[in-house]
Amino acid sequence: MKIEVTAVKHEEKEILLNLMEKYEYELSQYFHYNEVNELGLYDLGNFDYVDSFYHKNAKRWVFFIKVDGKLAGFAMIHSDNFYLESRKADFIMADFFVMYKYRGMGVGKFAVNYLFDKFKGLWQLTVCNRNTNAVLFWLKVIGDYTEGKFELLPSEGVDEDNPGDEKNFRVFLYST
View 1 (spheres, rainbow, N blue to C red):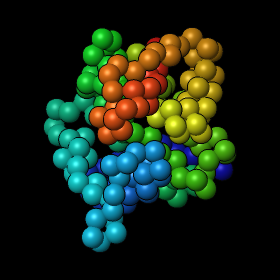
View 2 (view 1 turned 45 degrees about the horizontal axis):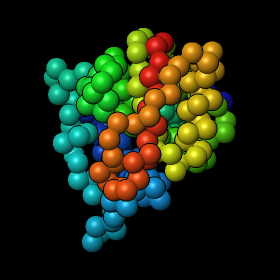
View 3 (view 1 turned 90 degrees about the horizontal axis):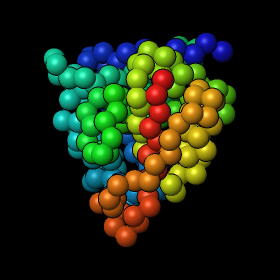
View 4 (view 1 turned 180 degrees about the vertical axis):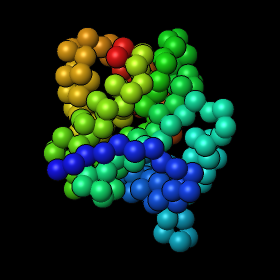
């Protein structure tokens, strides 16, 4: 099995949006704001968000994850520090997705390790507590990569998309 992590070119944005549709579907079990539109599609409505990864001076990067040349997922990274105001991270794993077919095969771990190696510094990511598989994945991958030298911090504030669930997110900060 050959795993690759490749930069997403601007002309491949539609392919990324297709994968993001599957990502949004998966997240819909955890977040109540995810609704399909009259065409049965998620309003990835935030095309500006995806476009922001392609602005000339943006410190943002998008990658496809491929297995044997076939799309298996994506990763979106940026260096904007708006999730955790009290700590400045060099890089934020904004979105990370591996399709079900490729889970449990080391694909996600390979991609994360590749990206941590490529972007050295202090990292931050946020995980929905209700997504126990994701929590376990990130704890294992980060723990292995850092040999257990990372911080698990409580989230700051309330998840605006799920009012009343103040403990919705966990935030990890660690240095690569």
